[in-house]
Length: 144
Image (cartoon, rainbow, N blue to C red):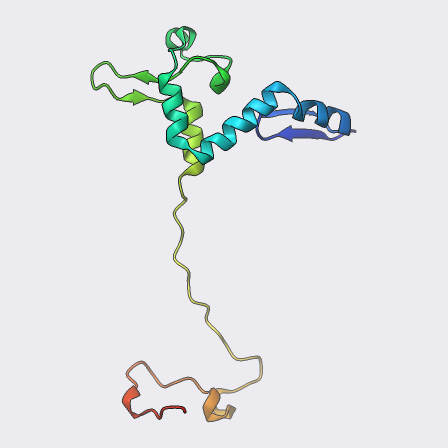
């Protein structure tokens, strides 16, 4: 059973072989999707500004979707008649969600432990950890 190749730019699958892959990668749709993808990450404001400056897509405004998506030569960005704010289509919101940084968890300090069978009392003084946190550091000698 042949494997299928999934294109992340075009969101389509096709039988995976050299001929099909080369034909797809050189196709107009794939090249345009790839350009849109990288243009979005390079200049998001310019991409949105370009979308706003286009004429509105009448089909999208009447039906709420367009078969061409971001490839449409018209804009799918609507404006709210009451507030005047721009309402972005789901394709642009999806790309915005990809570029927003994800919240990171704080890095937990790694807790070190002695190898199995070693006892803290058997270590030389230079390898023993300092006493509890209320240790008075002004009485520690300086090196050098």
